[in-house]
Length: 120
Image (cartoon, rainbow, N blue to C red; front, side):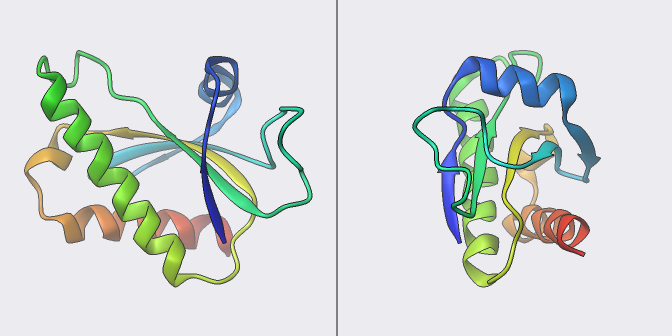
């Protein structure tokens, strides 16, 4: 399964407005099924399009916000690598402030729970 990024602001805004919400202990995921509407993307290819959103309200330090984003993306990458069959979705991950100090396994557990929720 291919892991790609959500590329434009319009696509991310659309997921924020129209997407379904899943709340975990360390992050919130807004998601929509299907591929993004973009002329460069083939809707027939199966992939997960992921983006992150961390506002200044989360933490004033950009270094800490970026670390939260990286931890969430890495947990998603590891979980997608382990699974074979997943639907094509667009997702926007918003880390919670606990994702900075918690153990990495907790973030992976949240991602695993979300993927189990959407696939079955």
